[in-house]
Amino acid sequence: MHIFKVAGVSALFTTTVLAASVSSAPAYAQSDIIRHNEPTFPIASAIEVPAGSSTVYLSGMGAPVTNTKAPQKSLEAYGDMAAQTDGALKRIEDTLAGMGLTMGDVVQMHVFMVADAKTKKLDFEGMMKGYTKFFGTKSQPNLPVRSAFGVAQLANPGWLVEIEVVAVRPSHH
Image: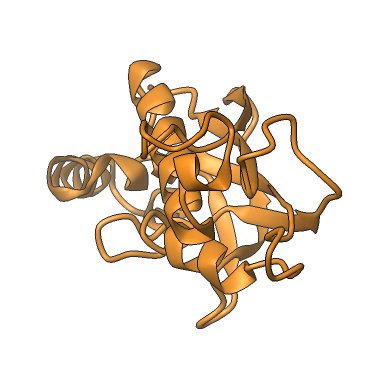
């Protein structure tokens, strides 16, 4: 994307490059958002959002019920941390899609986790297992800035994780 800011390039050449890159580039690459990433780190260290972009704040979401035969609001109804993270992020992905956005438009994420009642430990590795299905992949390489928190409890006693995100709609969408 930096090619568009290079001075002295003819307008015809810039138009040709723009047409070629827009037609072959996936939707997530068509913004002027600058992500500062460290090699091999699964989150961005900083993100710059250009003026004129629209900010979209999504409320925290937990996983949907995956086992309808389990007691309501139980861990068995929602699954382990990896399954819950995957489910919560799928709900976020679906909500964004309904707004014409993708996971590639997410710039910030807050992950709230509770310890498993049996092990008394946070399953950070399980959260990362679900997270890495949506971020930093070959098909969706954009990484958000992210904070992960251990909390005493969540509103739904069966949830191990609740995730909220901020997405950006670039001004040219």
